[in-house]
Amino acid sequence: MACCYSPCSSSSTTFSAALFKHEAHLSRKLTKPTTTRKTILLTHNLPSPRPNKQFELKSTNGYSRNAVPLQDGLAENSPMKEPVGSAVEDGTISSSYSEKSESTLSMTVVGASGDLAKKKIFPALFALFYEDCLPEHFIVFGYARSKMTDEELRNMISKTLTCRIDKRENCGDKMEEFLQRCFYHSGQYGSEENFSELDKRLKEKEGGRIPKRLFYLSIPPNIFVDVVRCASRCASSADGWTRVIVEKPFGRDTESSAELTRCLKQYLTEDQIFRIDHYLGKELVENLSVLRFSNLVFEPLWSRNYIRNVQLIFSEDFGIEGRGGYFDHYGIIRDIMQNHLLQILALFAMEPPVSLDAEDIRNEKVKVLRSMRPLKIDDIVVGQYKGHSKGGKFYPAYIDDPTVPKDSITPTFAAAALFIDNARWDGVPFLMKAGKALHTTRAEIRVQFRHVPGNLYKRNFGTDLDKATNELVIRVQPNEAIYLKINNKVPGLGMRLDRSDLNLLYKARYPREIPDAYERLLLDAIEGERRLFIRSDELDAAWGIFTPLLKELEEKKISPELYPYGSRGPVGAHYLAAKHNVRWGDLSGEES
Image (cartoon, rainbow, N blue to C red; front, side, top):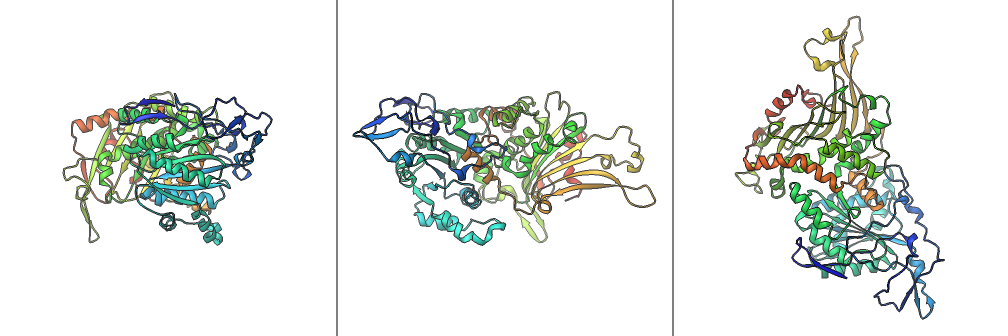
C-alpha cells in the first residue's frame, strides 16, 4: 500500500483504490493476497457470470447499456486488490462463487439531509425503481453528519416521493418496498473511520454479491476532496466498480477548477468522475441533437448562412430566498451561464459527431468551446434586482436578504454576447441572458433566421422587419415545446400577412409525464454512460471563456445596474442586443 502526502489534504494519502474489473476478466493472474482467506486459486474454466436480465436496458444514446464495461480503471499509483476468484479452503471450492456471480448496486447519497437530496436525488431514485429501471439487487444509503436512524431517514424522504401517473395504482406498495432498501449512516465527511464503518454496513447489505458502488456528493465543494479521499480508501468496491457523481460548482475560475480536478484525480480516474449538470438531462436539451441530425429540413440551415443569431435565455420569477451564503460567493454568471447555458450552446453548435458514443460527442463539444472568444467587459451587462411594490405586495431587494452583505455587488442578472470563431458560426452572435427576480420563469433557445433575400412581401410587413424573420423556439421549461414561427396569409380577400406558429407542445403530443433530469442522469451514471456528463478538458475550456471577464469584474468592482423585482431586467441588456443588431425574442409579449 503506497503512501504519499497530498497538498490537497492535511493528512497523508494512502492509496488503496478498489479494483474495478468486469466479471468476464476473473481469470487474470493473481498476486499473493493479504486477506483472511487461506488460499486464493485461479479457476480458468469457470463460466463468466451473466448480467442480470432486469438490467438489460438501452442507454439514452440507443446503445445497449450492458455494452458498458464494469472496469472504470484505477487511480494512478494505486495497487490492485485481488480479483474475484474461487475461494478454496483446505482444497474445497467455496460455495460463495455463485453468490459472487451476482452483483448489487449500492448507492450512497453523501449529504443526505440536505435539500437537494430530499427534493431531487431520493425522488429520482424512487422514480427509477418505480419504472423498473434499477437492478433486482440494490440498496440506498444516506450519509451525513446529522444523527438519524434508518426509520427517520425513511420518514424524511417519504414526504417527497411521488409516483408516475400511469402506474398510480401500486404506488403505496412500491414506495414501501423502496423505503425498506434505504438506510442511513451518520459520520463526519473527512473521517476515514466513519467511512470504514459505512463500508461494513454496505457489505452486510450487499450479501456477498459483487458490489457496484455509486457515491453522489450532494455537499459543498470545499469538502469534495475529503469525502472522495475517505470513500476511495475505505469504502470503494473491491470487486466491481466505484463511481462518484460531483455536483456543481466545479470551482470559481480556471485555477480553482483545475486544482479541484487535480485533487480528485489523486484518488479517482477521469472515468470514475461524473460531473453532473442537470440541465443536460432535460428532455428538450437531449432532443437538440435528434432535432438537428435526424431532420433534413434543419441540418442544412444550421450555420451562419441562414441563422442570424441564437439566444439562450434563463429567467426565474423569484429571488435567492435565503440562499445568499452560496449565491453571493458565485453570482449568476458562475451559477447559470458558465455551466447550464454554455453546455446547451456547445451541444447546439457542435459539428456532427462521428457516432453517438460519449467520447465522440464530448470531443465535438470541446472543439466548440475552444473556438469561442474569451468574454470581455464590453460583451456583457450585469444587473442586480432592487425592491419593488407590485399589487400591494412589496418584494425585497437582493441586499435586503439577511444572508447577503449590505454592500454586495454580486450580479443577479447578466446578458452576454459570445462568438464562435469557426467556419460554421463566424460572425453569428450567441446571446445569453440569465437572471433572478424577473417577470417570468423560463429556459429556452431561440434561433432567429436571416431575412428572405428579395422578399416579395416585404412591403406587407412595413417597418417591422422582425415579422419577416422565421424563428425556431425550443422551450426547455416550463411547458416543454418546440415551435417554428412562420409568415402566413390571413384568410380573406385581401393580402394580409400574419406570423403563426407550427407548434409541438409536449404535454399535448405526449401525455406521459416527462422524467425529471436527475432520473436520466442517475440512470446513465449507474450504467457508465458518460455522454451527458462533463469531461475535465471540457470544463477547463468552459472556464477559459469566462475567467478573464470574472477577474476584471471583481478587480474593478463594477457595480451592477439595478432593475425592479419582477421586471424584464436592466435596460442595458437591450442596448447590448441592439449593438449586435438583435432584438431579444422573449420581449415580444408572446408567451406561447
